[in-house]
Amino acid sequence: MPGKRGRRGSPGRRSHTARAELSFSVSHMERLLREGHYAQRLSSSAPVYLVAIIQYLAARVLELARHEAQNSSRRHLTPEPVDVAARSNALLSDLFRTIAPSPRWPWPSPSCPTTPGFPAPGGRGRQAPGPLTDRPHSPGGPGLPAALGTVTASQ
Image (cartoon, rainbow, N blue to C red; front, side, top):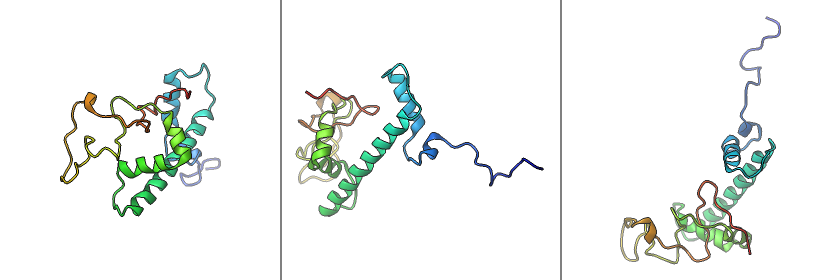
């Protein structure tokens, strides 16, 4: 039939993420931006741009963490080399310094060996995490943001 094309020839529907060739979800970011009421209006390119930035930062942090884990002869990527990599890079440490740690899940400090979830010195296995209020915050360090984080104004 003229005018009708098979499945292979038609482009079909593609998501915003596929069109932008990104790995992180653009529609999820758009929903978060709309629910957060950050502005009255939102352009269609704003969530795409923000997702591209977040994807680049995640790739950069993971690349630095991979090198950090290899340098310390570790076979698994854990939060410790990610934290060390983010703190050792001047630009990333300045960026993450403005992120407020989430009270639900503070970022573990590699300098504190008794942080819940990390093995104690000389011990084996993982410690059971205590109540959420007993978890120590790493001073001046980055925190895991809740739903892409709460950013405080830098002073």
